[in-house]
Every structure is written in C-alpha cells, then in structure tokens.
View 1: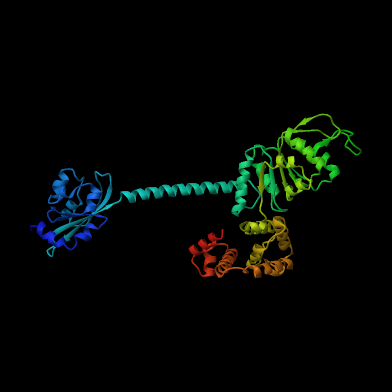
View 2: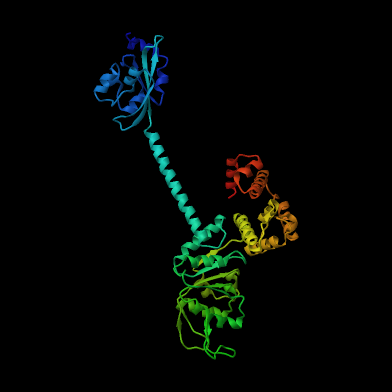
Length: 464
C-alpha cells in the first residue's frame, strides 16, 4: 500500500495556529511526511544542528543523509521499523543531541508524519562531567580532612569533637614542624599538657624525651637545682657526685614548663638566657654546658597583668610568646563534652570492672554544666560516679547536689531575654541533643522525636 502524502501547502495551513508554540520550543523540532520529505524545521533545530531551514525544507531526508549533512537519520530508521527511535547524534556545530523520532500513523497504520525531537545534551553532558568532577573533588577533600582529623586524634591523647579543639590541633600540628617556642594559655584543667605532648609527638624531636616541669609545684629554694643541676659540694646536702638538671636531661628533646607564671624573677632571668643562648651552668660550677632543647610553656595566669605589676619579665614574655595557643574552657567546647563523658565512662568501667552507663537526663545535665574545673573536674566526677553508683545506670540521684542546683538554675534562666523564635530553637536543640544521647544513632533519635532522619541531621548540623 502506498504511503499517503500531505502537501506542504496543506501542512502550512495546519501549522498556522501552532507555529508560535513550535517556535517557542527550546528543543529542536524536525517534521517530515511519510516519505521523509521535510515539512517543518523550527529555530531551535537550526541553533543546535547548524543547518539552515532553506537548506532542508522540501528536501528528502535520504538526500540530506547522502550529502553528509547528517551522519545518520532517526527518521529513516522510523520509516523502516515504524517504531519510536532514539539515537545520539553529533552535529558540525560540535554539539551533541539526543534525537527521538516518533511516527504518526493514520487509521490504516501507515506513517503520515515523522516528528523528530532534538534535545541538546552538550550542556547537560558538560554539567554532568562538572558534577562528577566536583563529586570526586568533594570526596577527595572529605577524605583529606577526615584523614587529617584521624591523624590529629591518633597523635594526641586529647578528645577532639568540637571544631575549636580540632582547630587547636591543626595549629599545633603546624607549629610542631618548626623548632620554636610555644606558649599555651588557658584555664586550669583544659588540657594544656596534652597539647604540649601533641606538639612534641609530631616534631622532629619526637624520638627524644619529653620532660614536664610543674613550676608551681617545686619549692622555690629547690627550683634552680632541679632545672640547672649542681656540682659536687655546691651546697649542704648536695649529692656527692653532683646532679644533672632537667634542662640537661631534656637535651635533644622537649621541656614543658607548666605554670611558667609561677617562676620567681631570679629564675626568669636564667630561663631567658637558656632561650637566647641554649646554654646552662650548674649551681657551683664554672663550666658552660650547651643544651639542644625545645621549650614549650603554659600558664593559666594573665602574664600581661603580671608584667604591669612587675611580677613577670617583659623580655621573657616576648621570648616565650612566639606562637601562642589559647585553649578555650570546656564550657565553650560543648561538642567535646559528650565525647569526654563517653571516653571516661569507658575508661573507668574498664579500670574498675563495671559496665555502667549514664541516664540520658544525667548526660543532659552534664552537657549543660559549666565545668569550672574543666576536663580535670569532668574526669574526676565520672570516676566518682562509676565507683560510687549502686546501679548499672547512673541516675540523677547519683549526681552531686551542687551540680544539679547549678544546672537547674541555668535551665530556668536560659530563656530569659530571648525572643520566642530563639527560645524555641534553644529548646529544640536541647531535645535533639537529649535524643541523640539516649539512642546513640540518628534513626532511633529521629523516631523518638517524631521527625524524619534527614530533618534530624539538618537540625543537628545547624547547632554545630
């Protein structure tokens, strides 16, 4: 049976009311009759393929294919198989398109039209490639950041979950690579010694000794002999063979002078000489001894104020304060608290042979507590709770009454001077923390709060 033809004139009349719609299509449109003669081409087809209307209108698709204007024709394929056909085609414009040709049949099942949709996938392909590249980069950066984080934590005895703590470790890692003095500042119990150890472990001196000296714990009359040592017969009660000082013991390694603000002024002068000249002299001796040491110091005192009151030498301060590292108090590192609670619960359960856990309300109270004694206070409290609790679950009754009273006062006052939105956000944040502490995973915590896991994660990340 011969295929029916529609004349170009008849087809034009048919398009009169639809041409504006066809021209507005972002995709290219190419229409032929049942014998593959070109009836219509829209502007988008010209843009995508680089072919002009006047070059193809009235032309048979077979001839267009023979001329090499197209590498292959989906229209011709449709006329052969009478099925919707999709091919990927490249044009001389350099663009790549997804070409779909659809047969239009009459009542007898004969093809009267073939409508071809040409969708430019060049940009989509480029976006896909860019997306893949960004995905690879994101995975790479995530892996590098996570690897750095793991390296930081593996190299330190510190528990670091809060971003401020991680940033301290990053800074410590950078300064560890250079042999300079470091002054670590912060309240008592914040972990200054752990940061000093971290710097030593990641320095070129890591295989040598790390000597800690608590300047506030050694009596003033013994401090000089402990640090610098003494020769035979230097003073009454001196050892017969004399004694090597801690600066000599630390030779080749690191000496950590904790509570350096407690050094008396006469010892500050001697320390300054060690820093400037890398030389010491034992008490009662005349020999100058060279020492190769790195000095890290720490204090919880306000050295600027001490300088004003003539209690600390300004020249020594500038020599010590080459690279300062300030460790925030635990109350400002909220994300560390939960990790520390878990760490010390595991530690003391193992040490004392228990398998106790914290009630979620207890954990919530301890998360909100201000911890004036910082990590040291938290550690001591957890050991006390593990040892003294009579039950497997440590409950509110096991907490010291002072902590409960302080936290209840904090919770009562926490919504003062807040807008409704701020108060709701604060309460929401507390409920999310409590649910996560209770269940330990996102899915169950979200279910407990009656929200989906993705919402839980989003709201939890908002508070980080």
